[in-house]
Amino acid sequence: STSKFNKPDPLEPGAYPTRVVQIISLGLQAQQPYQGKEKPPQNELYVTYEFADEFLLDEDGNEMKDKPRWLSERFGLFSLDSDMATSTKRYLAIDPDQTKKGDWAQLAAFPATVTVVNKKKVKDGSVYDKVGSVSTMRAKEADKLPDLVNEPKVFDFDEPDMEVFGSLPQWMQDVMKEALNYEGSALQAAIEDGGVKSKEEPKKEEVQGETPVDEKEDW
Image (cartoon, rainbow, N blue to C red; front, side, top):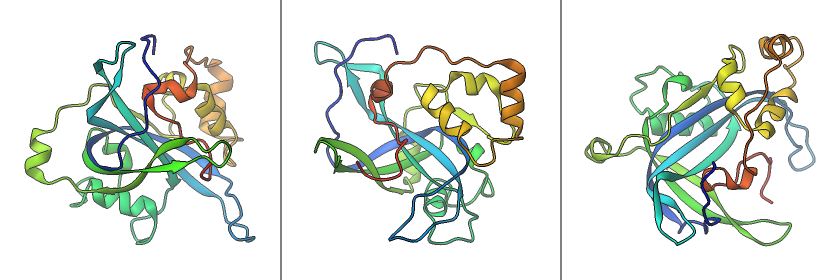
């Protein structure tokens, strides 16, 4: 986060080899109405993919091999019986044989092929990257995939690791504190007991070259 780099251009739309680098449980979050109808709250995940062959560029335009590009998505968490849920589609793409029996927390460092699409922000028309879909990587491609550059990070809202929580950017901590099940939670108790402070973070749009998904709709 202390290295200087050019703000990255949007990625070319297409399929990219990645590994799962972050799995963050955000708690029970209120949902925006859809077509005028209220939606029930959902437990949400924030999942980040680390690209194997796309990197941030330094001030001279050279790839920084120690800073691979990241792309995240935020979605409701449902049981694997919910066939149409994004969480089910993503889980089965990452762990098609269900070796981890639906446990998202164990998918850190798993390979996946992420299809990137470009979207335009409503506010200013600027282009940003978004996960279009995730598919299973073929075994022989996964065998050749480099290991993660960054240490994987997993956070469970209900059983919080406060060292991990303290390493998360402030905006993400704030999302958790706004969760409908924050009051009386183990996370609230741990925060109030320990007074967790975040490390100083770069601006959120500069973190690992991605736009964090802290909005519920396209901009």
